[in-house]
Image (cartoon, rainbow, N blue to C red; front, side):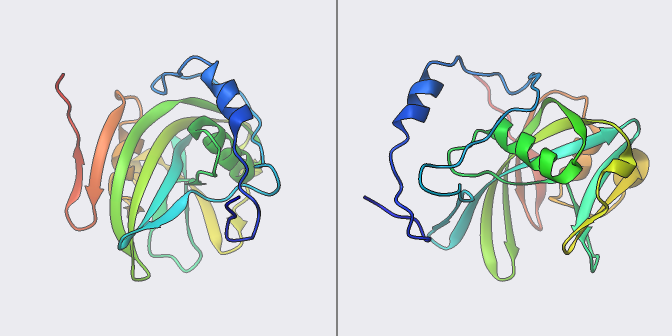
Length: 206
């Protein structure tokens, strides 16, 4: 039986596959979901979907454009330098919708609504000497409650609300994040982004 880095046996997820096989596919471009549960793998906690492949670290991530009227939430390191959209890495065995629900529950600590998916992206960048290939899905989220309910800091991460007009002129990573904020009411997008080259839309003609 294979084990993960913590020595926990990775048991087959036949129960999960059976359940999911019986559920119709969801169109992520237009979803209406409430708070939904997430589950630990049998025998231990879920692990981030981060895998070393060749000279890259492959990461699966969800992010959110969180709106409160005409203001949006951004996160950043306490020492400054840049901002990024709320979110985090998807866990093993976790769907994208479950992942964004979990991340928003942890970060907002108040009511919210996942409105729809905004974009799917491939993002290539280097951080701390490591080459990353990040597969991201970004959602539009509406805050239900007061902005003051959202913690302004967690560990070394700070969180701030900005007017949309100001946010779209700030340094936000990845490079296309500003476009998602400004174009949050536009159709679903497929985006490819490489640091130093900038984002481009992937257009597929059938």
